[in-house]
Length: 276
Image 1 (spheres, rainbow, N blue to C red):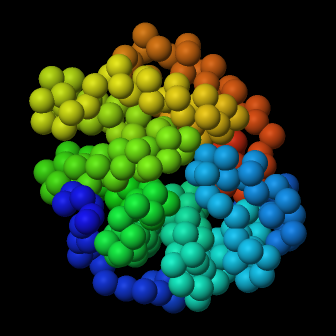
Image 2: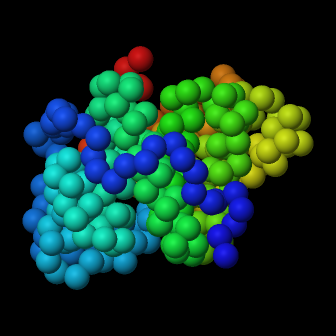
C-alpha cells in the first residue's frame, strides 16, 4: 500500500508534453554528445547519482542518448511512447529541461506539474519505485519554489516532498541525488520558517541537512549540482559565516569536466555564480 503522504494528487491531468512551441535548445556546443552504444557503455558514470538500471539496447537507449546529449524535448517525447520504463526518461528530461532552460515561468510550472502528476500516478501503481518517487519529489520541490516555499508548505506540498525523498533513501540508500534533495529541503524550510518552527512542524534540522549533504557528496563527489546545492544550503543555514566554504564548493563545481549536457548546464551555473 502506498504511503498516505504519497498518494496521487490533481495538479494537472495530462499525458503529453503541453507545449505547442519547440523547447529551447541546449545552448552550449561543447556539451558532450552520445549515441545509444556510448550511453550504455558509460551508464554507471552517467547515472551514479540515481542508481537507475540501464535499458536494453533499442529505442529507450536511444532516448537516453538524446537526453544526455541535451536534446530534452525529443527524449521526453520518445519516453512517453514506451510505457512505465519510458516515464523515467520522460520525467527526467522534462524536469531537467524545465529547471535549466525553459524561459517562460508559466510553462516551467506547467511542466513541473506534469512530471509530478505522472510520477504520482506511477507511484500509486508501484509504491516501491524509487525513481518515480524521486521525480515526484523533484518536480514538486521545483514547483513549490515557483509559487514560494511558504505557500507550498501551507498547501501540504512540503510533506509530500519530504515523505517521497525519505522513501527513496529507504528503498535505495545509495541514491545520491535524493540525499542532496532532502538536505536542500531541510535547509530551505529552516531558512523560510526558522529552526524552531521547522523542527516542530516539519521535522527538519540543520544537523540532518549537513549529514545528508555530506552523504550525497560521498556517493557522488564530482556532481556540480550537488556541490552547488550544498553551498546554497550552508548559506541558508548559517549565512555569511559559511561564505568562504560555499565559495570553495562553487569553485569545485565550476572546475568539473561535465560528463553530459545536464552537468554542462550545472558547470555554467557555477561559473555564473562565481562571477556575481
